[in-house]
Image (tube, rainbow, N blue to C red; front, side, top):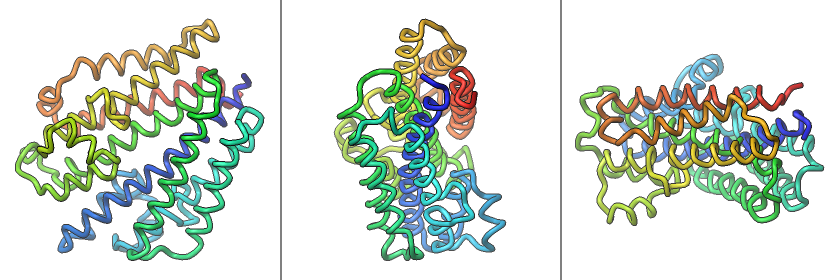
Length: 313
């Protein structure tokens, strides 16, 4: 496969995943702000920090009020990481890789682009936010469903999945970091008695509320939630699950091409590092520190995949 085509597939699904993830992060901020109305501005700022967009936001806005943050994340034309910008980029990459996609995947991407852009034509109000976030999550899920249901399990599928899970791991880590570090900056408070409503919000933001309760018999504790979102092998948005899928797809590519790349080595090292951890060891080093290190390694892995497969050659 041409490196340009592989890169378009990789980034198409990174951008699609990022659209959904930004919607989930916005949802987490919205409901946390509702439960902490006296410090709502701090909560919105924490969302921007978690998304890594603080500098860009402050060049465009003076205060971290709800409407400004919501529209910055979802529809700001001057924000290259807004949902509207991301869906444009996803569709552009889909057009570049059009011949590698099934008709169903292409139509799902095109439909997502049309519907999301239409929904974001006007400024988003807090009242209309839940409906728009549901639309974004629904449309991106349809694209993933088309990928899973119609694509051959070949290198095309592998590059698409690599982009998806690199991005998904990044976002789960950031959402968890919002709770543990930005909302509770003191390490001494980690694992203490916290507001269950906020923890349920974090679980809902990664579509994990019901599955968490199944696994943990309904009991909510910060430590078990952190374990579920980091080290659980069955939770499809956990850091462990994402890295297992990345290692699987890289292994499939290496076998198909007959070449062992550096990205495979990095992936195996990151996966082995996660497998050697327990939630107690994670808490002992500090969850924020653990997440920061994971994000750095995950980003390095994504960059190495781009280099190994000559996306820009």
